[in-house]
Amino acid sequence: MNQPSNLMLSETDRLILRSYCQMLDGLSHYLGDSYELVLHSLEDYNHSAIKVINGFHTGRTEGAPITDLALSILEQIQDQKEPCGQMTYFVTNKNGEPMKSTTITIKGEGDRIIGLLCINFYMNVTLADFVKDLCAAEGGSMGQLTTGPKETFSASSTELAEQLVLQIQKEVMEDADISLSNKNKEIIQRLYQKGVYNLKDAVAKTASLLNISKNTVYLHLRNMEQGEERTARTKEG
Image (cartoon, rainbow, N blue to C red):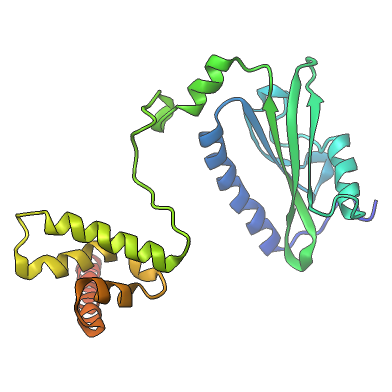
């Protein structure tokens, strides 16, 4: 094998691996109990598993060693037999139950492979349980597929900015409780709160669609930022 059994990881390498721990929590919440998620650190092959979720599928817990198959996959990837840095395959657990698995390399400083992310799908899960996980809402309860926040899918940041400006403009213009003189200010404020002005050309797109100058948009944004700064200073005091 090209890589020694124990790596000396830098603090940056460890931070990268810790960031994956949080990602695994999110993946587990999304995928449900049918998926086992294991994060390996190559700093210590004897206790490589630093994060294990749903380990009941294989009996593993945090501190478990790396598997022989993971070692073989790692060697193939390092030898460029698997240049994409990941492999997908079928295995069985200790009970002989089938799982579809993937092993993905994690790179750190110097483009070194510092860890592995392993995902195992337990294929004996019942259809009812799989659908239950698929449709589970926040907190694990069954939810309606039509509920939840709206998400806008766009081909470019300019298109996204335009869609959001038009969406907020429609909401504000239809709100009779907002005076006509305050509608543009309200539109810009809502867009600001949504983070739209982190997008390229969002100010120019707002000015064009609202038929106002870019300076007017910037004026409203400065006033909002100053207001937030005053509020923050008040809380600190």
